[in-house]
Image (cartoon, rainbow, N blue to C red; front, side, top):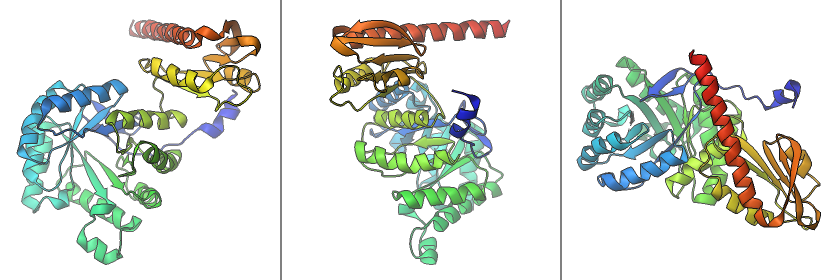
Length: 377
């Protein structure tokens, strides 16, 4: 694809300041990070760690853990120690939980400073964050807006969410603290998108984007994809969380698929496949279903096309690392690097493609290691 033709695919990201969530940069020119949240009882450290481990394997960059009580912040120390990714402590109204979470090693505190009490309490939380190297996330939600803003605006609206966020930000700025990101979530797609657009114009803090309480796996994925897709396409968003009533691992998978589809970040294999029709020369749907399961362990970015017939197959194959196109009489065409390479019969399609992908991934990783070694010399 020519440089001219690639131009329409470029997304110009909003310029924001950068903060650190543990060792992970958020904002600025850092990659957009993918987050999720545990749904175990935090005080059950073992169950929470197990869930975090599965999220890590799926590629999560940051994991949030709710800390509603003292038992949770006691367990948090063990959880943080076991985790390989930064842990965000989710705090709502009790300022002591925030201080305990910072002391336990949380990389970030999700907190609204205006909700935790008077200035002295805010000062204590900010000092704890500074002492322990914590960043913060101001998390405004349309379902829990302050009473005075609801009275002022009559209902949750973009202006109310933005005003709430900026009010909370001002409190932290007044305490000389600027290591924070902001979210203004709503379950209504239009409300959330408008609020984020307004906030993006009003400040340069990194933005954590999400459509809150989006629903179950299918409905929530669709709803989140529409809302977050609009924001990401417009260059808004430094870190994302797809909120699903589903396994947190699914949130991570959907988040990466969104970023991959927009060319903002790539992880693992992108499978391009047709919906199948009467022209298909093999069972496309079942093949893709099994292939995606078998390739879930590959983290190296690459693309594979699986097309049922020769109408679009060869064209798609020219744009993917590995292509597979259905052919007549059970003999199909395999493409490598966009050019025809060899033919294959029906019975070993998935096994053959998995082997090719694993070989290609190994080659790519070996070249990366070689390039790194040369650069280090």
